[in-house]
Structure formats: structure tokens, C-alpha cells
Image 1: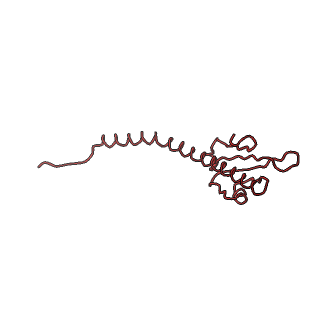
Image 2: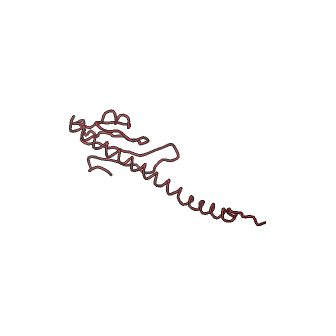
Length: 131
């Protein structure tokens, strides 16, 4: 009597596992890089939005606002809500005891201690914006 056996051989299964391993070795580092660039874009976007809110605040009150944390910026700047994990600071610059002439700001994304982005974005309204 002849047996009808179906299935995969051990060699076929090992080849499939090896191919999956190679694809994973290529894809995982690329995914981490895409994620980092996404975090950097979020920090840059928040800085631009905060700068726009600073200018709106200046239009209403004829002065710039200092907010040393993202939470203070969200509370005091109209229509501004920072993204989670973004560190943001806006500082007004006063020349010789007068009203603030311009503001500077910085923004970066830091999630935990080991996955900090190396990019920090600086905004200077006196020199035309993003530096």
C-alpha cells in the first residue's frame, strides 16, 4: 500500500526562516530611522507652531512671552498645543531694559534616556526664523 504524504521538508522550512531573518535584519534598522525622523519632524513642527503663536501673542499684547516648558507655552500661547515627548522653550530677549524686541526658541524630542534625537532646532525671530 502506498502512503500519500504531503507537507514541507526540513530544508524548505529552513530556507523560509532564513529569508524571513534576512528581511527582518534589513527592515528593523530602517524602521527605527523612520521613527527617529518622525520625532524630529514633530519637534520642528512644534517649534514653528510656537513661533507663530508667539507672533500672535505679540500682535495682541505688544510683547513676547517667555515660556520655559512646553506646558507653560500651551497654557499661555493662544492655540498652541505641543506634541507628546517634545521639549520646547521660548525666551524673550530684552535689549537695555526696554520691551522685548524678539524671541528665541529651541525644540527637540527626547523619549527616555537612550533614544534621544541628536537634532535640536533653534528659532530666532530677530534673524528670520529657523536657524
